Length: 223
Image 1 (spheres, rainbow, N blue to C red):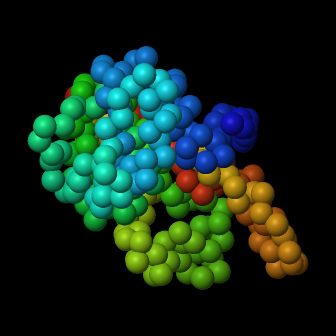
Image 2 (cartoon, rainbow, N blue to C red; image 1 turned 90 degrees about the vertical axis):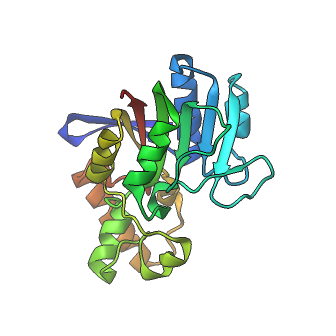
């Protein structure tokens, strides 16, 4: 984990990738959870299972398409399946951008959670320097080009919109973090790439929220 004091008196924690962020937030907030069930929504191949169970919690995986036998199918346009446990914590990593109806889905997730439970969310950062430069050069955000429709990248998760949707769904925001910094370690094989790298760095210097290909939010259900 890296920590940067940056302009505008912002002090934003920075994490190398989503797993590092999620693990740190689980460790930080698990003791405040109203129960020990962690719903992993968009569980994929179960990469977070060990991190959850190491804390003595019970991992409850969900997915739209079942990739492992343990996962429970949940179309987030619908209420949570019957006979599942209400969550004390929810992992929601890199799923939001794939949702056709993000507000409805967040409301259904909220209804699946106990009051006082914590949501740990990551999603691509539209303000990132790479997205900003791509928009200038190509007319499209780097992570939301036409080719990404195949991955159902259909919702552009601007921070202020996500904050508003979370609040409408009964959450208060606890933390914001910069996530996914691997692009800073890439090789720079040409003058063109060197120029792009330095423009990105300048954008990040001018706007702290331009750091990170993704961002993370921690939110607590209050209603």
